[in-house]
Image (tube, rainbow, N blue to C red; front, side, top):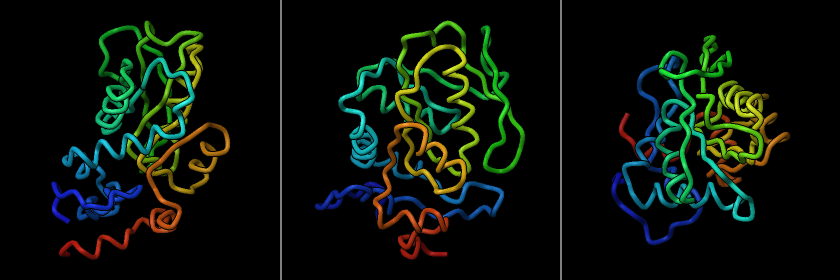
Length: 200
C-alpha cells in the first residue's frame, strides 16, 4: 500500500497495513509503526482509536515514552488539548528527576527518568508508547508516575502483545490499542499477513 494512500473503507486498524516488516534482524523491533505516522489520516485514525475507551475519563496530561512514544503521545495530547510529558531515557534531562530501572524488550537493563515538577497527587495521566512487547518499559513508566503520586488513567499503544507483561498491563490498567481482535494472533506471532505485499 502506498504510504500516503487513504482507502475508502477506513475500518479500525486499516492503517496497520502501512507498517513494513523488520529487515534489520532479530535484535531490532519486529516492525516499524512509524511508517503509518507519515500518513496524516492514518495517524489521526490511530489516535482516534486509541482514545475511544477514554472519552468519559478525565485526563490532565499525556506522557509518552522515549523515543517513538513521543510521536504518538504528542499527537494524542494535541488531540485532547492537553499537555505532554516526556518520559526519558536516563541522562537526557538537565533537571532534577526520578529514576526507574527496567528491562526492555531486548533483555537489556536500562533506566528511565521523569522530571519532578509536573507529576503530583491529583494529576491524571494517560501513558502512551508505540508498542508494548514484554511490558517492561511501560511498567517502569507506570511505576514512575505512581511513585510521584499521580494517577495512571490508562495505557495506550498501537499494539499490546499477549506476553506475560502485556497481559499484566491489560489485567491491572485500563488500556487501548489499535489491533482488531482478528489480528491479535498475527501480532503475537510477530508477523502480519499484510507483509506479503512488501518485496523481500
